[in-house]
Length: 268
Image (cartoon, rainbow, N blue to C red; front, side, top):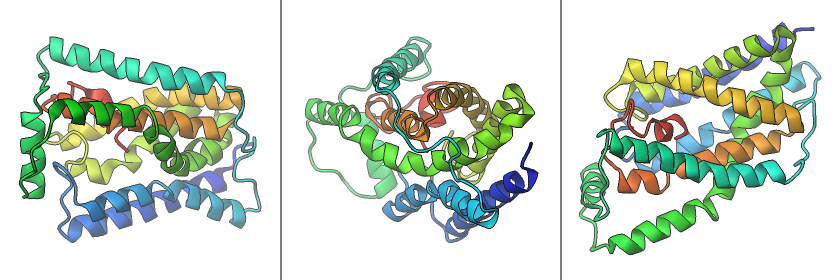
């Protein structure tokens, strides 16, 4: 049976809390173009826990389980697959970006450094490009996935822990499409002010919804197959680790809408 009250209440609470926080930041003059202020970045991370908070509130109201299939990790194999496959996928995406002329390789980091200095208003000290590239890459495939997965789990407890199983009575196709659209629109306020797809606010929202819907297919399938919201958090966290990792450093001028689009897709 479709839990309409639970679904609607969860979606409304999640959107209202998130959009209110982000609207307050935007109204306060916080910029989300370039490199956001440190305070804004912390708020963005905190907002990732709103879906989990909403799920807890709604489950308490209707005396229901937050995650019907439990909290177990499941087998290790899909975690390893995601860990190995994701960097390879990003390498492919950015390789195509460069080959198609939608971005250029910047191994001396001149473009990246200039972009950071413009965004922060501060001159950076001398940087060894090779050392920075190595450090960012190593970080993106070691500790970053675990840190990002913790924050991503805040989203996934809501999206694939609470909402997905309650949408499944609609059938797999409708459930996956609806979840993908809701997940994408949840990001809309910051996309409209340039956090994702800078320079393409409306088209950016549309592209993001397309991408979250496509990504939902994979994440939903794996979550339901292994009955693990923890796995969903890991997938999301590994993707974010690459989205914030080396690729934006060495290909900083990737065309936002098409070039390196995968990074803008998973950047929150």
